[in-house]
Length: 285
Image (cartoon, rainbow, N blue to C red):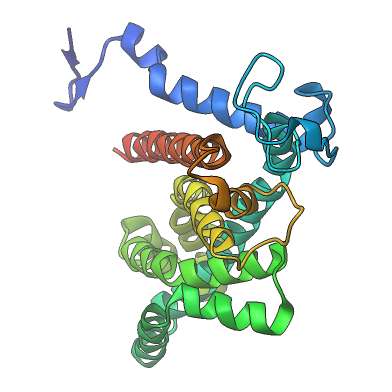
């Protein structure tokens, strides 16, 4: 049963407001597991991700090997756990780079005037037309396959979309009454931007950052699957997919298990990001 406040807004009962729901709780549990795997993988497995045992090559999932073994007899569960650090680092690094570029370009476009706005808009249009795959190929040719290459390729490729969001947020905040009041009181432009425009324009990016982590991991894994990621024998999840595609017809777990890990993390990060976004939108009402 809902109640209505004096202002006419509908408010949920206190009991419902306290319970975040099953999906956010599961999302936090999945991300916590991945964080533990990235920081302290030895807490989740006692195996060695590089231990080669050819006699146990391509064994299906069992009690001895929960997710099976790869072509070199290495335990796949152990490799996925140890690969979480590199995959999460790529996701966080690419998203942080994309957000940094987006904030810079978005604020230039939103506060720099009509000419600067048009120039930044034209640059974003060019970037949108430049495929991420082509950028990755260029970086791989120059720097070679590595985590840094993936971070730069995914980060730069994702930045234009975020930059447009930041620009729109800056333009919306500029029209708020508290910004006009600060200007009317004689506050300097730099002070108004630092105290009012920047905090309120950047606050919604927290949810976007969480959403971007899952997206970046998927992008990076896709590039790694095509051979443009971390070189073997790294246990990064995209590299595991690339290494197992030659055996997909008779060792399905080499593709399904790393792919499932990628999907779970992406869905969990997206779900958590949407929950944060709804919370921020509710706080603004």
